[in-house]
Amino acid sequence: AKDPVRVLVTGAAGQIGYALVPMIARGVMLGPDQPVILHLLDIAPAAEALNGVKMELVDAAFPLLKGVVATTDVVEACTGVSIAVMVGGFPRKEGMERKDVMTKNVSIYKSQASALEKHAAANCKVLVVANPANTNALILKEYAPSIPEKNITCLTRLDHNRALGQISERLNVEVSDVKNVIIWGNHSSSQYPDVNHATVKVSSVEKPVRELVADDAWLNTEFITTVQQRGAAIIKARKLSSALSAASSACDHIRDWVLGTPEGTWVSMGVYSDGSYNVPAGLIYSFPVTTRNGEWEIVQGLSIDEFSRKKLDLTAEELSEEKALAYSCLS
Ligand code: NDP
Image (cartoon, rainbow, N blue to C red; front, top):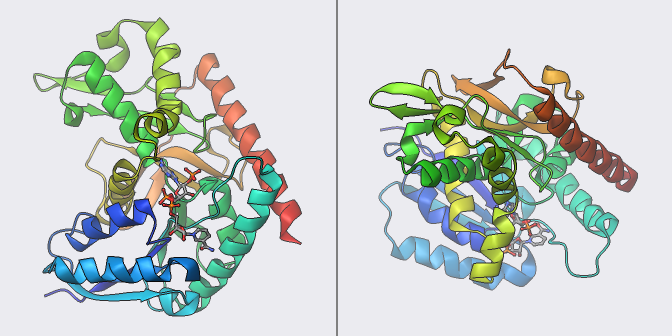
């Protein structure tokens, strides 16, 4: 039998956390034969609720779950973890300035970065979910210099999956037959969902999405805004933000990162830019990536038309501004 892997979830008493931890305990994230020990972190006001989550995990009697550490102590939470899913963050409340939210998150991510750097397992893989996800990941990278930058990522897989879902609904095809959409840039409404290289399997032949949809007007406007604004649509409908889909896509992100993407398929991940596609180096930006042996690699050589170029640049500009704002809060 395999040794258990320690997986940290921060903000674990929140609603994404509540959807995410049973998925991890069932093997959705690391595979059905990989035992796990869950490390659940939350802040003191949520300690009692967190303990309730731990009680439910015990009650669910998950065969793969070999232990639960539920704590408000960041060092205890980070000790020995190989996977860290950062869901906790300070939400923007009505009337709050962006700078105030950023200042709070900078201080949260700074302290969690230091704890991960000192106490996590070597080669720990980090996924930031809490918004502003890309910039929180960048702050984490800044304060955990000994964690390789390749190990610090943010979640855009939900946006990626939403794009797959929209194409599947539109064409009335199975979502598993749609692949290679791309989310470029920020996990915000400036992101660019790109279908120019996406395909659908039709009687075992892969056909371009653009050819099958045959409605560029829809693909260039409504499709893009639907994906960009899906989070807001869910809040409107549910009166709560998306949680099960966020949790599920966080599992997809880590699973593909650890276990690899299938040949010929890529996924979207927010990763440290090396300047590919003329995206400024040093931003955490969502790119198409393939993964192998626990390492991601940006898919190279895709053609970028003028329409796409503008959108790639716009979301990069927003991230550069967020970065500048974050750095101004660092002192
Ligand atoms: P959720 O579990 O609903 O969301 C957690 C974070 O994920 C938010 O920052 C949210 O951003 C972000 N997020 C990213 N993508 C998505 C998406 N597609 N859909 C929904 N959310 C997304 O929040 P809760 O308030 O229920 O739980 C947060 C937990 O974090 C609480 O248990 C709280 O105690 C803890 N917390 C920890 C802090 C700390 O570590 N110091 C500080 C504050 C809270 P957005 O809000 O922009 O949607």
